[in-house]
Image 1 (spheres, rainbow over the protein chains, first blue to last red):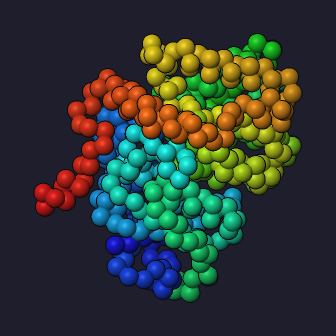
Image 2 (cartoon, one colour; image 1 turned 135 degrees about the vertical axis):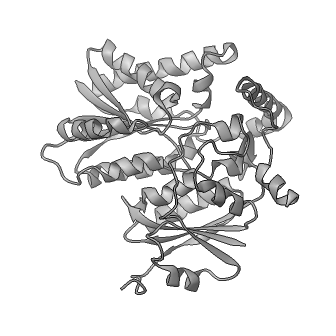
Length: 160
Length: 227
């Protein structure tokens, strides 16, 4: 199963997403969801393992991720990188890992709480493609999965 | 010299490792006669004052923890509220840290930070990088105190150095990062001894925090199975 977190304004680019990502796909539009920034409180690692201390709509996303194989992020960009809306849903992914440490791909990594997740990125606007590819590769490595690719989206005609 | 320091961590100041680093660094600034003012983005009430200070001062440092291979989302949000152009020139420098001790894990974020000042009409003053900061939060614990005191002293020295040179573009700052990757024998030692030691330490911290579940618990999968 593939989960797509669309952090663009609701419905925007939905046509492009369904063209680019095939298979058993569930698209989650996060723009109208209540999602706070991760506060780095460490509760999901040291106090209530696997459960985020912030009680908002992200809990629903974690419940989907624990049964998914692939995760795609759809994000606008700023400063050559994903914007804060896109980064915010990634920063909250911490409960998918646990506090324990191992070496994976030759690097220190946190252990997976569940199973590997592959990660891909669809982005809008001007950004540094090569930088985003390296970022996606590293994010996927954190999740013990592969990078599914980094794709720049065209101008969305569905919203015109 | 007067420096504006902005703490880009989302964690409340009281428990912020970044704040502890800034305090030690600031001690070095003070020792050399420099001054600084501090703003913490974890407190929304400080955003307007932080933005005003950013616009009106020439020496700015962002201090931040690595979050998912780059800048924390809260800091990205703040950056978007800053003007792209400015009246007088300014230099932005960075203090970047992370939980793991391997330097290479912080390099991609460093690349992003290098590209950032020009996009805000400023020059780049370098990046002070060091990993291994997870235990800062546990620095009052007897087991950790000695190593953490040494780490924090390092930041005070870097505060003195920044006051001297006016930036982080010096050889001593380049060395501050330590090792890029662990050598093979550390991997071996980790497998044989260290892994268990580290696990025990985490279990010990969790117990102190009142944790009643195993740290590798799978709460949502349990729900799935029940269903």
